[in-house]
Length: 133
Image (cartoon, rainbow, N blue to C red):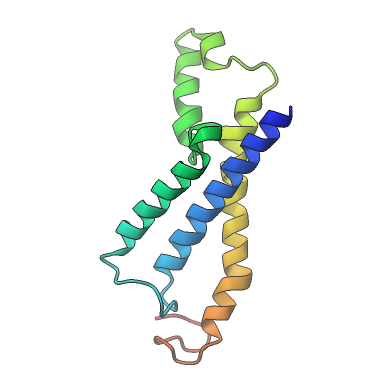
């Protein structure tokens, strides 16, 4: 059980960092962001860094569809124990619920904390009345 908790925290944290970085790189009011053409490069470097950090724990799923979809296909094909080897549902907590939770927390953190801080700088990059252009 302790191992599942550690792995779930790793997936949650990795997805949190990835989604937070994506929001920061695509926010129009972020004057420190790179050129739009470089955003995919930085997102790729973020994915690489997150994988290097959490792959030793969970192989860095980061996306519930990458794990759940193949498991469902394997289960429908008749490979029950191969598709769902854990009767306690640990795969669900680690590879499905944790990334969703990490993404939701990152979105909430960005909207509640980071975005208001970015909009507090008057006319930094065309932000008018709290709306970024």
